[in-house]
Image (tube, rainbow, N blue to C red):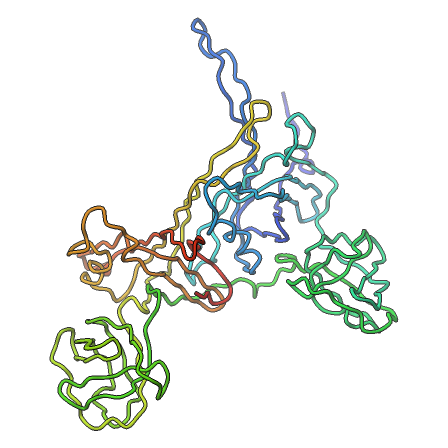
Length: 496
């Protein structure tokens, strides 16, 4: 048979994914995989004679193109850091996922209930975009039967991609202010919307969150952005106005792509303070204060800690980089120029000033090619005999961080891993030596809480640094009967 191919009917082309107000543009392809789990029907005489359906679900795989927003990070990472075993990964309310073709194609696939089932790696490398490949799992909507059409996916072949936008024809001078549009607006409650050109009632101009009050096909009200504070009118509407949805991913702004080097720190806190005075003796005993010229206060230093002192006036011998030699009291310490070396003696009467900061190797360090956070999410399906899978529940999450650090020595790694000495007994907790592992870039931050160092190989060759790839793992912690997060990823500095 001689087949004839009509290129105008061959289906191919890119798409975007929309989920929880975020439009994901991708850097490769979107792969939608229907999953059919079966069980065999066997005969002792004939072997397998049939396959029967057991479970049906969908998997949607892709890698985002690198655009970053607070909402995108919340969607990718926010739900799992404090999730407990037995909780549904889909939550109490179905969140639909839409795969929408673009570039003048008109097909969309809408999955009524989806959740991330493979958390994307987070990569802190200035030569890479930050978000790795992820996977969504989609199932039927809550309460839907498997035999109902469109219960698992709805395919629309007349759905062209467009960001909702249009003309404003009214704006009430009320609280809340309600806008009227010339045609159905296509917005949803919770969307971000930007209005411009409204005359008279100018409080309607700006970027807001779509509010539920007065919401209809051609009407909507406004909250202050990312709040529930209503926007009130300030005058009578006299004409004009346009709106456009402004959810993350709606506008293709290259400035939203963040590639940045990161500073690394493995320390829950880095002690610092002010020099309150010294004895100008041998050894010179320094006193700490929490504020300049304040009362004596505990310094938090340990014997052997490296620290930097600067700005002390009078006794110049105490300015520089030193190691803690002794701690006679919680608020005093003596110093040496080398670990365990001779005590530094005073060289003049102290007259004021001076700040200090601990500077151990883990307090601030660089890496060869950034860091990577990986997430091993373990889930379990829940199923019924008549409808198959109706939920996936959270079982566990393992969070690890890896990097090739610069500046560490073998002794630093041995001490950090706590693998020899009085506290290194078999059965001891890794969490006993854990600290928060923090990464800070330009507009992008990550933290792994209570991270214990698990791996730190030594390389003895001419091509590699002595200390190889380090690996940490987060450990669970509680405070005030509340579960603390395993990790956080944010566009703002993370505290604590």
